[in-house]
Amino acid sequence: NAGVTQTPKFRVLKTGQSMTLLCAQDMNHEYMYWYRQDPGMGLRLIHYSVGEGTTAKGEVPDGYNVSRLKKQNFLLGLESAAPSQTSVYFCASSYRQKLFFGSGTQLSVL
Amino acid sequence: EDQVTQSPEALRLQEGESSSLNCSYTVSGLRGLFWYRQDPGKGPEFLFTLYSAGEEKEKERLKATLTKKESFLHITAPKPEDSATYLCAVQDPNTGNQFYFGTGTSLTVIP
Image (tube, rainbow over all chains, first blue to last red):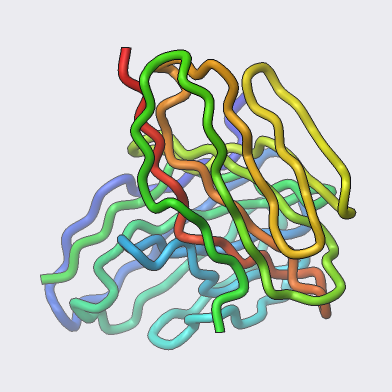
């Protein structure tokens, strides 16, 4: 029962570095999402996808890019990391309006 | 403008002391209101979906209710294992593709 798996779980970056967060789901869900969670701000949607090969912007897309080349994978990229991108990142997939979340990636940008 | 507002921000209860958490929303044409539970270091876990005013859902010590502008999560005789952050969310009324979350209520149940 893997569900939604995120890698890595922790990462520390220096300002200006790039990285990719990987999300994989084994439930054959069409919809996938990337959220960030910050204290006092709640979960905010970065980007989402309604199916393989599609992506769309959410509430806070600036500084991030995404790709959905395979149905089961949704990648989140940071091209040039900034301290404001320090956060906990959650990936989710959805089915019949229910969101299924991964366990998160704690990212620190120094 | 915030779509979802939750209160209180934090709540401490004695074991067995019942209480309610509030979620008010401003979207018109509600497509669904959702409650999630989040434990420290983990992703949120789905609890309930409510669609129309007057609807109620129950699960163990939790009961969720919905009115035209707010939802309540009632916790009856809570136990320490109910300690978590409870999140409320609404679905985008236009596209249905996005979910807007509140900032959550952090519940601590003291033995």
